[in-house]
Image (tube, rainbow, N blue to C red):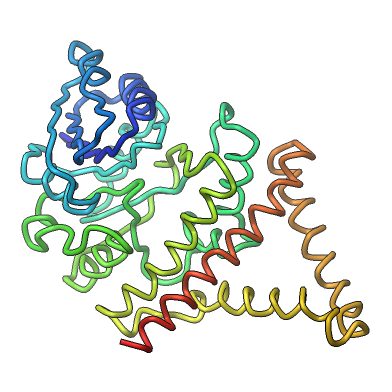
Length: 319
């Protein structure tokens, strides 16, 4: 099976270098790589040229149109049986394509995705962020394993589609703000079969600081409401949880201003939650400092998403 890897890039040459190096280490070699430079000022063409003798690679520069339409640009130029999309801040383990190829030989699947993990070389902050986005104790942990709820919706940091899926759906219809969610919903509504390939994971850097992480999750919360403009029924109870948590946390931290006794009562579940997150994250990462950072990252994951969700919901009500 021949794969086409589509990677949109915007001002991240160093990330592309690490990603291409990981692709060069793949045990399964039957794939091409298309780098789509989306109007970057910091171009990665020189980085790509380092790998022309090692990878079947193509470089394209285009005017900025956002990541969704840049992926479409790559799809129209790809020659593979399946198109695989990675974010530029991913590192791909050596077995990835071998794992995907074996799965597709044994299962009839039109679109698939895999989970993400923290690489051992990640910074403590990146490992804490990865924990918050994958832990079963946060809403980040509702995807990426066999026990995920409902039909699996692939996400574009690690996603594959057959050529037929692209030809029949036309690819992405929006370029940002939930573009991969909208695409996944439309793939499923078109009757195509999706699957999670648990062992086809990637190491996803996401953000390098907690401030960047907050901004990213705030945008994710807004994106979920944006998707409801296209598919009103796609707001599920699980999507409301971060918003409810955010409201509850705001009430909790303001309780001392009007009811100190009630505040003291809620201190117990608050500290229990923190202790549970700290213990689990410390065990998973074998590090007390990452465990402590993971508590903060988990609260950011929930409140940033919840804030963005509520902000965009209010904006939608005023439309």
